[in-house]
Amino acid sequence: MNLLPFLISGLGIGAVYALSGVGLVILYRSTGVLNFAFGAIGALGAHVAWQLLQWKQPLALAILAAVLVATAVSFLYGRIFAPMLSHRDTVVRAVGTVAPALFLIALMGVIWGELPRRLQFPTDQMFLALFGVRLTYTRLIALVLAILMVVAITLLLNRTRLGLDMRALANDRDLSAILGVRILHTETAAWVITGIFAGLAGLLLADLVRLQGTFLTFLVIPAIAAAILGQLRSLTITAIAGLSVGVAEAVLTPIAWISPYRAAAPFVIALAAVMILGSTSRAALRDR
Image 1 (tube, rainbow, N blue to C red):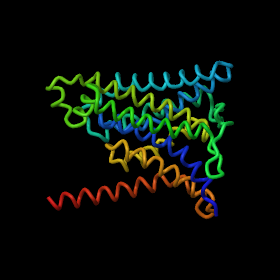
Image 2 (cartoon, rainbow, N blue to C red):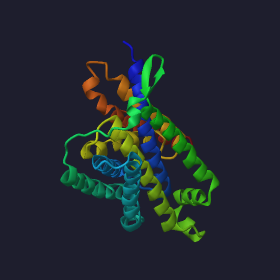
Image 3 (tube, rainbow, N blue to C red):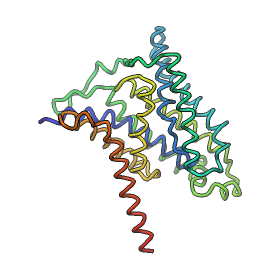
Image 4 (cartoon, one colour):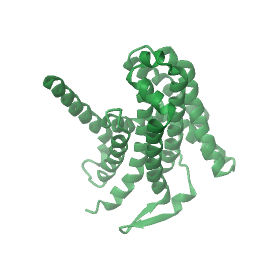
């Protein structure tokens, strides 16, 4: 059985999972919020891009509009609603993002319905031959974009005042406020950044998989699995985990007895990660 075509195909999807996971981690590190609306925000942006293309607008405008819409929605939630839950525990803040996810699913259903569609990019027709297997430029762009975004966010966190504020906020919100960190400004910036990630991920998934509101909303699960494997802190490990989840899903495709259940791979990986990391944490506490 030749798994190479599936492995290379999985790199493209895995790159989007990596991109999404990093978007989730940067928000969590800054605000303590695990954003379950990430997929829905990206799906809304992708629908806007699809609609503009149907109206014969330029591709560049459609892509820009998708990212701007996703960023605007994320900004509005982060600026208006997230501060109301900022002093609640992590679970409440995470559950709070389910409401905008459900609202966006309903909105997309009313406007565009649930009929599956596909975004078509010119790069879908261009490819690079890798070990005799075609790697489309769209998948290659997803892979390069994931790497570039990890590098960019790492530099942001380590080389800028905003990054310093984000890291301080992640460690202690109240102490950061005492030290002069602009809490609302910093958290809003994190929501804007995660909105950009959501817009890009939504566009790529709508092309590589399919454009459907509910489907794309629940594709946040593989990203959460990647983020958990990165312990919601490490951008590099999260990116590697996202790639691994995508490859794991893809290589299960040709295995007849397990192929119908391959979509459960991210859930299994996330569960295994929680169990392993949980047992490691307990062991570390016992050794103290």
